[in-house]
Length: 441
Image (cartoon, rainbow, N blue to C red):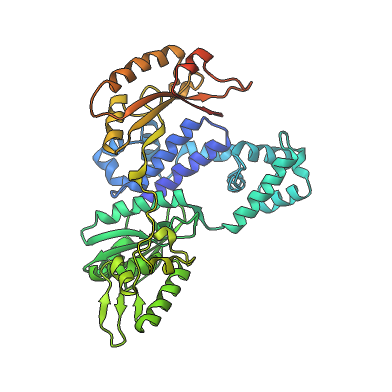
């Protein structure tokens, strides 16, 4: 059984638990297990055989048992029970932005709606107002969400796409034939929504690399394969296109397959105007076929008299003309970040001690971090009482007294209670440097 199938099973469990209104942290545990499986370069069956599944971070004993049951028997009793209790079609409704699982369940219970078409019709005819808790504004937002879903059908948002692309890169970079592997396409340009993923590798044997890509654990379906391109679907049904080129063409290919189309059309137009140069995924060529650039992106842009252009700006909005005048202003980078104002330590549901976090933050170049651990009402996340906040403050002071650490600010992610009050008394809140207020349902 492939990793993609196991991950899909866990994701479905998480979706159904969410519809049932189960605890957020229980659901998050399943999502984290899915993320870990997406990152694996070894098949789950092999890990089970070797007794190493429990060593994977994020896979606890309960989820480990479920994975073993599913892999060895082909089914999971827990999932079967969930599917009997929750109409699976309800998952369709939760695809609407802003429509949570509990509201979807309320709509189903009141109106029997299980399709997006029926949901849209009910909103347009104001039948949704019959559902408990739904007001005119909610109905309006649902219609907006459906319209947005239709516009972005088949797409996912950038953060989700980046995580998936990054996990695939980790796998590709572990392959013996890969000299270099990078993200291309709309993900590299940081577009808000992503229709498919584009990955690029440099290899001395591009065709063999494309064949090997089709057999990776994350792949659930091969759409097309031939030459130096392979198209597949992964567990999430997202299409992933891999291009493979020789190392000396990597820069030209990276520029070409990053796009956008408008940017590339304008760049080719400039190349023709400058001296009838031709740009493609293999390089920049003179009329007589002599290649003058291609190993790096910088060389491609330099060949047409331009400074290198950051991928996020490559949309055909005048960036080429600006780059022809000199280097473009630098974009904000990770190195520009000065700190992190929302972190959790092992005092609540984080994994690390405060000293470990402060040292890691300093190594990243951060000047400060704020510990915003959960508060007392969120018992499943080991939320802190006022007494524990005072005890944590002693540890923070000790860490701040050490050399080589980022400064630690004392904070909290304070639960907003059903009556609108906060989960800590005023004197405790006043003792904190940073307070984040959140509703946890």
